[in-house]
Length: 274
Image (tube, rainbow, N blue to C red; front, side, top):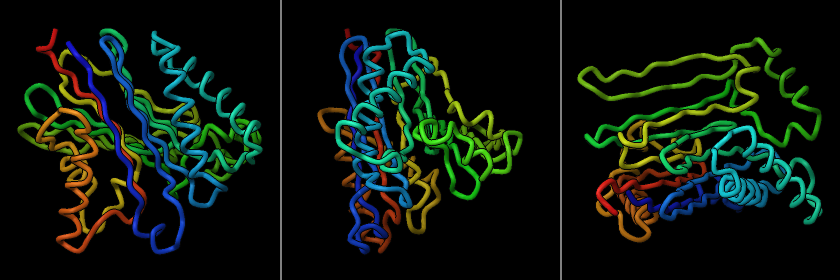
């Protein structure tokens, strides 16, 4: 078994027209026993969150490398500490680090996707079926791990109406003979710690994460966007970047494209390689 990984991100039309920077970022890394793919999406109403998204992504990838057991709490703890050290070193404000984080990681025989904030995790199994999980917060107000430093999430919880409010939903789409979308609604308390999804590594050829920009492509359903971005023609080299560029070109031909910034990172699992 061999892992390869790649990533891509692109500015959306709203930020391009407004002269704003791209606030999405992505990273990936893979070797013989490890693979990680990370995306981060900076909050548009925050500070310099284009910088914050990069810090969050790098902090997370480094923490994944140092936590081979893929213990989510340990990864979150290490990542948060690195966020804070980088913020202090660069003289950034707390609202500069308001950025979501989504990753998929493989260590040995274990594979896990995790979303802190919002975004999409997806996989293609060995039969070519695409499975998708989307995390969405009410009123487009996702949780950011930077909130812990500001007031230990108190303001965020209040804004959503309390810990027991069902403020975020998980959309699960698993195509089969009867394609359907399942929607599970969860409380604020459940969402504060993020959402983790374990995968049976033996069953998948691709595992990927996306920023919520995939849900804001002009004229396209988010599930179709994910399906297009995971329609890889080849898995050599920069396979995600090639697919992203092809997708963007196809969108332009039909007069549409990403409204918000968009980011993607993916791991390819080659079960035949030795």
